[in-house]
Length: 179
Image (cartoon, rainbow, N blue to C red):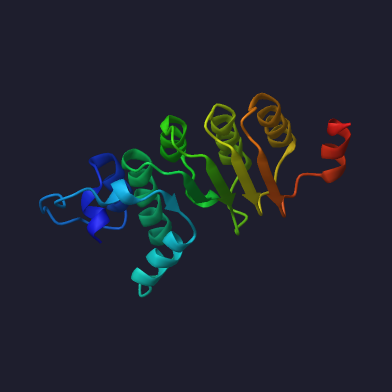
């Protein structure tokens, strides 16, 4: 809860739909996020446990999205695990502007992650010059996504680790391009 007090107005907007208003308290005495260098799936679990009596995943995703935005803005993240469902324009903008992330894990366990969001994410990744490790899990690619993914591999010479785990993208097509 203390991290929610650190949200700026742009980040708090995500919570308005759920009629969540944060108390008008002074900001925390020190910046907790200065000490956060890694965000993984435990964030989702923590949010889920915190709001377990609320219905629906929308609130969970909104809170997680607000916290990711906060971390991208204020932390010196090195490692970030992102649920594809929360990747929107604001997350992509902040991810692009972040210069400290070296490891990115993108995953989606739901079919709700559309190709437009994936295309936006891949375009952002194509411009990330600090990324050395990329893990993409359980995401379905369309033709344009595969093409852009290959462009990332070609142009990002710092990327030295790639894990495509359960990625559905037409393996035959991918193999033909690599020949």
